[in-house]
Length: 425
Image (cartoon, rainbow, N blue to C red; front, side, top):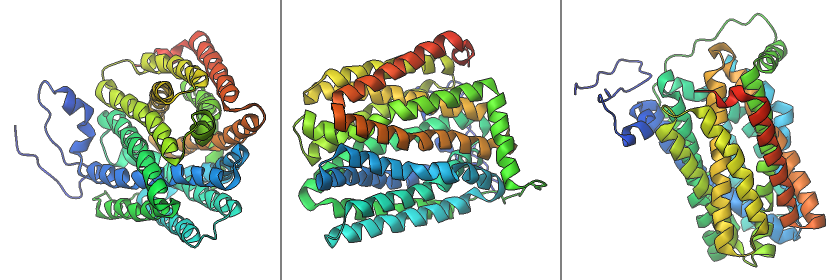
């Protein structure tokens, strides 16, 4: 094996692959890139804190109000900025250095975490404050998410894009395994304020990682039309490209019915399973463990196995386990159902991302990923609000059953009417 050569400025730090790479090499091939390793490490630490805060925040507002409806309000407040700014954020990601956009967004998120921690430490925190802070966090995310999705193409070569996206999902879902469990224990032992404080501190890792990256100088593309016309061009492109249009519409359904139920997990932990903050952390962890296994599977086989076929399988797996969850009333079977649901969810979202990114041109990548993330985050608050309302009227189990039936109907329609999706290689 030859000693790797590095040129400056360097996008990659190459490692010459063997003629017959092992499964481990295939699974983690994107980590041969210096910039991606920095990104992976920084994001892993930061996302650990993010999931601590999400879990603690949801339980805190449920503890303050005893109302599933308020859980829906928080989800709605976090997601509504997607409607206001996400498409604009996607166009911004095509116009300005994505690293700079990410740095500004990460600093803003860090400050919001510390504000929530201070309010909680002082015992002044109120539900309306949590809702406002969730809205402001959603505003930062509206610019962070499109830039983050498109940024990965600056960190790895195109041949490793599928693996990098899968590893991105792996680090997110690894955080969903560990973060909620630690949040539950921390909440029970020390209170929610420490969960928010830890989250604020973890942002330092990703900020430092971004500053240490060796990126090629940003080359702005000459723009002859307004940013709003650019957004319109991106929307037209996505709407006129069948595979992208179909994947984004399906993602919207997943966001409404397949993610909205997550809002109800604190209700499930307390009212259905008879648990507490620790139980809430563990049910989030079970879902995260399933999602992590799905992400690692894609990282391992995503370059060799048909993406379309695996995607199609997942569209049936997720609603099956979601329906099983609606029937369970004890912790062990809830764990199994949530693991299966998390697996299906991650495979669907991960492969949707991959297939969209591999079918979009580079000059429209930021805008199309803005539409992708807008669909995901923009419909999530509606799903959260609707799920919270239905659960407050009819209970969490029936609400989850309704979501499962919506998803199985969508899977059947996708399988029968849009065969080109499962034909994606």
